[in-house]
Image 1 (cartoon, rainbow, N blue to C red):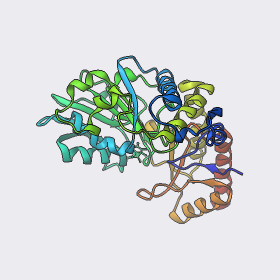
Image 2: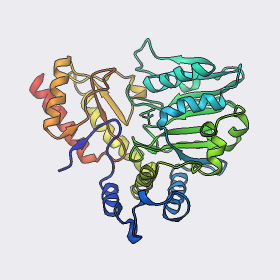
Image 3: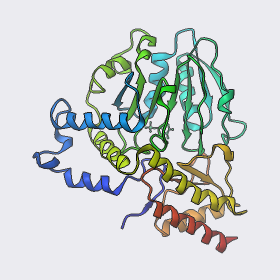
Amino acid sequence: MRKMNFFAGPSVMPVEVLKKMEENIFDFEGQGLSMVEASHRGGMFEKMYDECLASFRELLGIPDNYDVFFLGGGATLQFTMIPNAFLKKGGVADYCKTGTWSNKAAVDAAKLGNINVYFDGTASKFTTLPDPASVKASKDSSYLYLCSNETIGGIEWQAFPHIGETPLIADMSSDILSRPVDVSSFAMIYGGVQKNLGPAGATFIILRNDMYSRMNPNLTAYMDYALHAKDKGLYNTPPVFSIWGVKLTLDWIRANGGAEGMLERAIEKSSLIYDVIDHSDFFRSPVDSRYRSRMNLVFRLPNEELEEKFVSESKKAGMLGLKGHRSVGGLRASLYNACPLEDVKKLAAFMKEFEKANK
Ligand SMILES: *Cc1c(COP(=O)(O)O)cnc(C)c1O
């Protein structure tokens, strides 16, 4: 019996994808070896990888003047690689602090150059975002950075700033392909795959190809985006198992309506839970309702004892991962693409029963 999985990451994957991996882990489509045993150059891996990259382009509508590839090191390595490559010596880059993840990116960037914090949510305990229309880049800014969905705080940009010529860079680790995105308004989009796209290991990079001319000189090999792009991410050994899982997950996303289909699912699922919260004076959302996330739904109960009880009883009911991040406490349900509607319905029913029994 599979549990209902609401973990924030690594997180639930489509059953169909796990089954395909199980069927093929020993002998990939009758070729006599596993995908994880094959060379990453030429042959069956590269064929699968090319299909994966083509799928990603198609599903997200990535224009031709963008390169797409996968790296290792997680989203966290990008907190270093981005300023290392693009933050001009003596220049400035614009960062927001809208939660844990953008804050970590800003802290790393500030060690490598000058940053301007254009929005600081610290005072509001990271429960709100700036109005996108109000966001402006500094003069001669190397780039403006944001995190599209703060996985821990549960806030998500619903629209993005328009900042003219300044490159816009976004961490979309936890909401990639949960909705359509106009890629052409970004210079770079990146993220770890382990929330919405597959097993942990790979980091996706979508990079507009005019950005190479803006890179700092003398980058070491792994730090050099152009070097990676030239070989579509195969400069060194890629995380092959993770990429295989991404390829199969992208097939699943296409079969379920693509980015539009994922958005419909996300609206339906998140509404079920937010409806329970909004129609109750027992559950409470700490987040500005204009920006609450469809992927990571954060909520509180009247006191911490009840929150602990909620976690332990939900576990007994087969629901995993509902404890909030240790840095913020409370409760969190992550409803990524692969999380079945049925499981969310059961969670909503569980919440109502818990309220009745404990109010
Ligand atoms: C999980 C997460 C990260 C960190 O990803 P790693 O792959 O563990 O480095 C960064 N940003 C966001 C928005 C995340 O959700």
